[in-house]
Image (tube, rainbow, N blue to C red; front, side, top):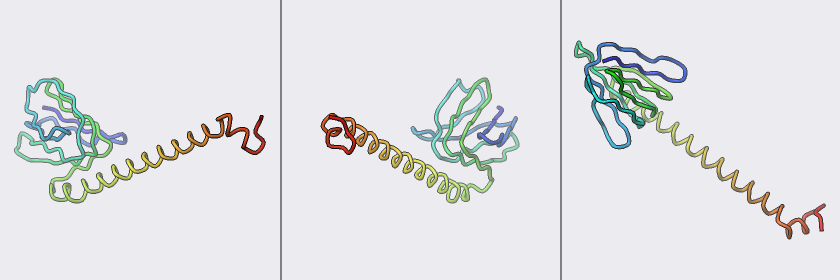
Length: 140
């Protein structure tokens, strides 16, 4: 099988002699072998592992993404990918960094939504007829 891993900034890897790929989506871990049926799934922040025809295993930490299988080709599109043969480093250091980044992003989105809600409430209050009459420079 052919495997391609891409990020918005680079083609992280292209490998032509892959005999199996193991990955993880929200439902759990799964394995893909040659002649697998077409598949598309969303990846979790996790480590994807593939084995080459030579028996060599390679690991890639992914920051989520889309995993697809079509015609003996596996494609992974992810925000960030770190390829390494040291699985422990990927699992303990890189995935922890990816999870922190995801938490920071979620916190920022929540804060942004709170500010948006406060702004909308303030606009509604100012536009309400009774609020206009009380506001400085407001109409009748």
